[in-house]
Length: 299
Image (spheres, rainbow, N blue to C red):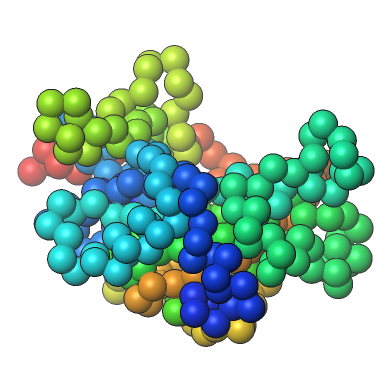
């Protein structure tokens, strides 16, 4: 995530003419891919000012859908190192407000109104099983350069691929102990006014540190203990994954990929919340930078 985290296929949707004609500006994440890194992530750990490690969120910009698709199509010609990934995780298709009475002041205002005609606002069997409507429905568009760092969510997640492929590396909540969570200061990528180049901008000291896994790539040999057996799943167009609450996932994608997901609030209260937090680590969480400096300067 840091330097560097469905059924609408471009050219195949019933409303192709509407989709390709979108003029509304959309928000997306800018990330920077260092020449030394294998891939880029958003919302992950990376080295920043004074050689400290930060949890860095992507820069956010806006552009038309056409502009985004052009940039993704020209990615191999881009020498800036910037990675474009549509990942506004705020219910950019439907939010919980979309289920309110029509005409209410809080009625859903989708960033992609044109696409809502082709995407269901809920998964009926899931809504029935969970006894509620989705909290958010999102569309994701990116390419193979964007990688989602390993993390878990407080949501039941229904994830469908429309185009391309998504590769999931999965661990259950009972394996939380091996992910070596640490705390890191918060930062954001921002474009420098003088050069226009993206750089890491640390947040104010009063911003709480972020708890995150210190393992950048769990797929590397020897990173996880031998007794850990991850589940690896590849989703192709038309295939759907149910990702239960609390499950850890590290996600890659192949070529230009479009996906949809439906997040259902897990309403973590009582013993469920206590159990998941206990599995993550019942002991005190260390500072990632204390460990980083110790390892760096140890003989």
